[in-house]
Image (tube, rainbow, N blue to C red; front, side, top):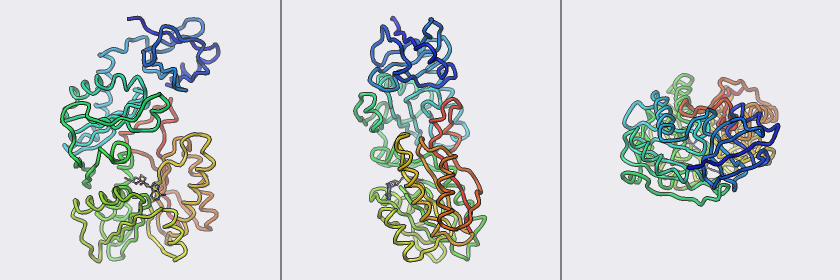
Length: 404
Ligand code: SAH
């Protein structure tokens, strides 16, 4: 089979040589012998090999590089790359109920492919045309390399539109998953891979959820009830970890009824449902911004606030508006924290760097008139590696602050 050839404009090869995986249309001089979704060889204007990747002329990102070596993208390549990703998740693969990100797209050097493991099931997101065309082969190989009961696809994401693809969901291999998959992160959760957000669960926050429970245990005496406000709670991730620590009163706030219904089920699942003087909780279905304005006007006070909003900036153009959103949100959080309390605050916008996020939170702190200390910089767990050559991969960042 002949292979397509992409020639790069003179002077535009540097990022490719530095192993950035994306080649934008403006850097391409010519494309020959290639059909959309084909493997292509990428060369300099004078015929020097640069890499091999896949092509989609409909996308702004016309080529995504799969290898910088002159090697074929064949079954042996796929086996090597998938096995490498599986092996590197050994620390997370500790039980039959384990849940973690198995393949982190560009950051595992397989652009466009996200795979998450939920106990006996894998959930795949195919974000690009090439991955979409090859997803069945990928699923078959994964099932061979990592024994599972079934593989389900959740490619219902807007970014596929940029590749000319529609949203799809459905079984790719083996058995269909149950309505809820039981997973364990020390706390147990039911995950809805059919209708939940992303592939069903925010696996990236796993270490921060455990950190929350540690902060409560280490800093708050059980007899003084610690008030925890969990903003954007989804299915209860942070809130249930707080409840399990004990000596807490937890308020979960989210605008999604379905998410809060599953949060309640998850509280019950961990036997934390009964309200006792040392362990109480409520789920409030409301817009977080409205909740905060009311709580500030009523002079509410919390020992710990977790603030994990959805992505505010989808691209560089939205950064200014997003920054104002983060500032407003964090300012209100500072107003609600008790003297000596903690704020765990996040941004999952890839377009906002850790540095910029810290500046925004600093601006909010200054406006609040409070004092703050950084206790820890936060990010995702080690199952979400970031390729050093791909800064765009560093999307989740956060700060643990103590506030006076
Ligand atoms: N912290 C969660 C993940 C949060 S995802 C975890 O660890 O699992 C973001 C959540 O914010 C979603 O559940 C979504 O329903 C909710 N959300 C988005 N916009 C909101 C708003 N304006 N008010 C309240 N909730 C909102």
